[in-house]
Structures are given as structure tokens and as C-alpha cells.
Length: 186
Image (cartoon, rainbow, N blue to C red):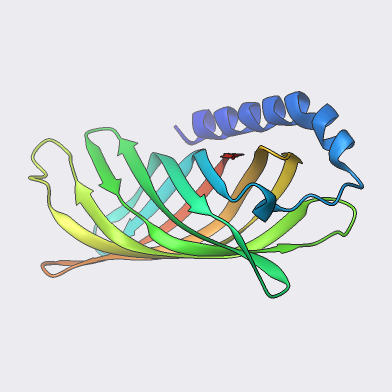
């Protein structure tokens, strides 16, 4: 399954690069900012690894749909967001509702390349058969990069998302997540 997820992620990255390379070259040297088109809706795909103490390590497909609003704050741009996240693996599934923010800092003056830290918190629900909708919370911190290839298209790469889930009746689970996707800005 790991090889399949890795192959899908690499194929998606290659397709995004080939499709957006001409637009990225046209954007070079322009002075566009994320806050010029403040609203965005994204689609991010990848995988999540859960480490459950005394049980084991599990990996799952992860999909997230974030909605964010970006505005200028200091040297960077703040993007508060909320979203919908689904994690699925054989005989198990969960839905989470992350709420948080990214602080996007432009790295190069002539290119709209951004780095950003991420902080999310929110509820998570086990929707597996027999999971009875068990609720827990999660906390996630991470970092990523994005590139504005068009005023309306931002490519996203989140190689580092670390966090934990917590519930009153269950030990904490630790998570690692890797996501790749795009935000459509308007």
C-alpha cells in the first residue's frame, strides 16, 4: 500500500508540474501576492501514519479540503482556515474537522514561493463499521511550501505534519501526515 501511495503522489506531482510549468514561468518576476485573491478552496491528498501505543503503527489514505482566507500581517500573510479531512484504510475510516492557521512568508522577491508553519486543532470522528462514531480531538503542527503558479492556483506541499489525537477513554495516538495538492484562489 505504501508503494501505491508513493506512486500516486509522485504521479500527481509530475502532472501538476507539467501542467503548471508554463504558467509558473509567466508568473516569475510578477508582484502578485496571495492576499490579492484572499479566498481559497483546496484539495490535498496524501497519507497519514498513526502510532497507537501498545497496539502498532497504521497507515491510511488522507484527503483534506481546506477553505481559507488570506490577509497581509507583518512581513507575511496569515491564512486562517477550516476544513474537512477524511482518512481511510482497510476496515477503518475517520472524519476530522481541522480549524487553524498558516503564516505564509514569501521566500523570493521575484517568485511567489512561500514557506509556512501550520497549527490546527479540531474534532475527529471514527466512522468505521463498529466504530460507533467515537469522538476524539486532535492537535496538528506542521510546515510546508507553496507556489502561486497563477493568481488563481497555488500548489501546496506539506511534508511535515505532526500531531496527536486525544480522547477521554483512549490513550493518545501520534500522527504523521504528508499532503500534496492545490488551492484554487478567488
